[in-house]
Image (tube, one colour):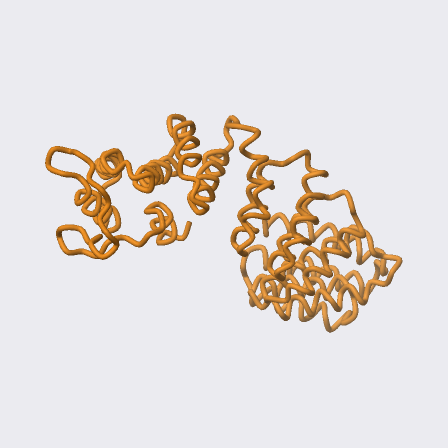
Length: 333
């Protein structure tokens, strides 16, 4: 992505320089910019700095030079400095020159603002980009992400809907939108985007997107106590699910049976899971816990009082949330 941007920069940068003059000092400036950007593409930062420093001495207010300095700072991960350089480049351009070159600077600047934590500035940049091209879906998607960062769930959902209206219900966008909202504690607001993925069903070479959407839906149903609904979806999707999501679905299946008090089936599912995927502390804990619920004849016994919920080996009983949700939380799902 960065290499493509640098390559695009060369043609855009030279075009801009021609707009501001193409002889003498400007020609020399252009040569230094090209040299600096080529060095930067090879990650040769000292040579890039040297070349761009010479360009800056020749043309300190040239938008092409300022933009190049911004890219240099961006590549060095000095995002605050990069944003400053891009701002100076935009100011130097003038209203009459705000075309594709301005658009490219704004994209860089918005990204630099996000990486430096200046989400309000990034939102303003994406708003300007939308003014330049209000039919480009990705700008709405990116501004929606920034709105989510700012806690503006309504703004995020509005932008996401607009992005989808322009991108023919892009299913990759839908997954991104749901996960963005979930990350910021607004998974209920993102449910409509998850439902779009589910409604489309499995697609060829979707990279497991449908399976992941099913897993997220299962977790959502379990979170609200809809264990029968979660189990129904699990039984539908597990036969065709691919790894690694298949393993998480199987674990969730065991947890649903446990919460529905079908301890015998839950124990069977967790033991089968262990045979396939190996043991871990959380899984062994679940199996030990379930074994206390079943007599030696395999008859399910009544769940004991809360004060008596420790497994026979003395390890603490699991908390009341579903086993799959606990495991997912531990793994950062």
